[in-house]
Image 1: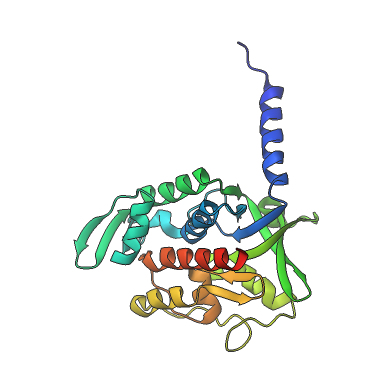
Image 2: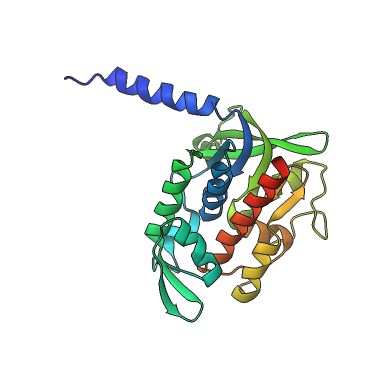
Length: 258
């Protein structure tokens, strides 16, 4: 059998287009394909919700790939170990409540389970705006990351969603768009993004779970985006709080939609 280059192109274009059209009206749009976004999407999709992740970079996984300072190992505590167990990701006990996982396996495992649960992942797409109607966030406005990087004037396209989740990490990119462009007040002391504070792992791990929630109608934050929005400290390469916050937000969204 000889290979036809046009058939290869046709297969890619038609299948991608079909996936994108199937994502124009979503139950949940997650911006950011780091560990928090992947974990959250898995629990949502397992409950038969139509979920898509939009990641601006070419690869998913956020900062988890690099572990701590490019030592590609991560730490989780006992409660979060149960989530890694559910994903089939191996851990070894270091001591007491400290468990070690390989960051390569962790990201790969999260991505594999999410896609098998029918989460649709789009890389190289950036959320440049949100869709807001009558004070409710109801979608995201997308453009190619390459367009953004090149500074080209190319109009974006819009995806409708019942819920939008900011899982963009330290930058809290979607929340900052909300702050800049909408008149909606966020559910924070100032009504705006409070900004991430310096490292304090013990406080940050509890803070990220507590503050992963709905911050205005139709809009949730989780993971480090929650710490940035509510003014919590960072925690470094311990990822337990990230996973626990993702599961918490997923369960709250499921309850809200069902």
